[in-house]
Figure 1 (spheres, one colour):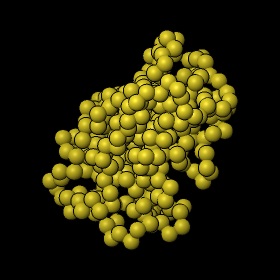
Figure 2 (cartoon, helix red, strand yellow; figure 1 turned 180 degrees about the vertical axis):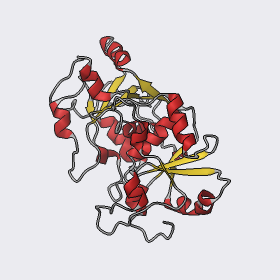
Figure 3 (cartoon, rainbow, N blue to C red; figure 1 turned 60 degrees about the vertical axis):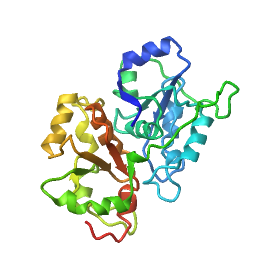
Figure 4 (cartoon, rainbow, N blue to C red; figure 1 turned 135 degrees about the horizontal axis):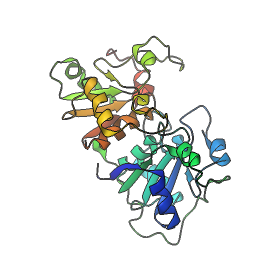
Length: 291
């Protein structure tokens, strides 16, 4: 991962907006994936930070399996249409705090954007401080005469993704006492354990053998909208037996909660991170024996 990433606080963002920095891009993820083509668009139109760009989960997900990410060509076109350059300061936020915003953070990091951050507390904290919001449509989509060669030279970091064959190949490793790799599943405990059935027809309940369950909500502070501090985050991983000097792979249902795992590991200074590209959206529908 080559990007410089981390948290940005609301007061820091407010100062950047006062300076009217041309390279500042705000990414608004109002909702996670759902059965509608544009999840969260109504919420975005109702209120968002001035100038923010609406982020639709499905725009950067694979069309056949939404648990996977889109390919490089599709992402480059996505970024061009929204004038999000590789060198921009990209600040991601959501309408619930920080539970969704690590997803766009992960996507831009995956394609090697150089400076991506998550707004701590998101829109809720921003509003609670009396800061400005606006209504209406997302900024216009289209090309720009100001674009320069190399602005959208995004390249996918293939080391940040693993496929289903890789996951199956490390099952014995995940079950051993001397793990060199950990698989962290960020879904809720009931779906992880299989006590709560999946809503998608034909999808099996349970989890990959040897996976560790750390729900994404575990990282949320007592205020319900910001991340816990670094010391608390480190304690969470250590208490679950995840060794931070080993490789860690994340997964969930569609790749949203799994992004929170990777973001918090990145905050701890860990660089060798990866997500299972397919997540339970793929694994749960396969006749894999490793549950």
